[in-house]
Length: 125
Image (cartoon, rainbow, N blue to C red; front, side, top):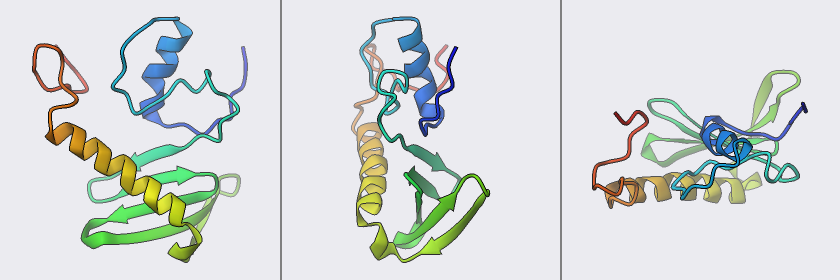
């Protein structure tokens, strides 16, 4: 038993569970085993229908249609956030764009397909 405070998101669940089971696998996951590197600062990728978010440290970068970018400083203990100038988080903006563009590229170019050529989806029957 342990308490893990590493920032993580849903995409980290499968790699973490497989790590707990000591199950070897070839991964196309963007997620990671958060128990394998507990000293890392962590990050979370979030999305809604129209917005994509990237949370690292105390900064949330939100990408919206029309190349709109917003950055917020997040206080998880208080459950509050406040906007900050985008210039205060250039690395966070670059990381957010990189994660989502890489995922889009991989999907559009068939890089997340099963060995039989079918498209990888959340629930494969």
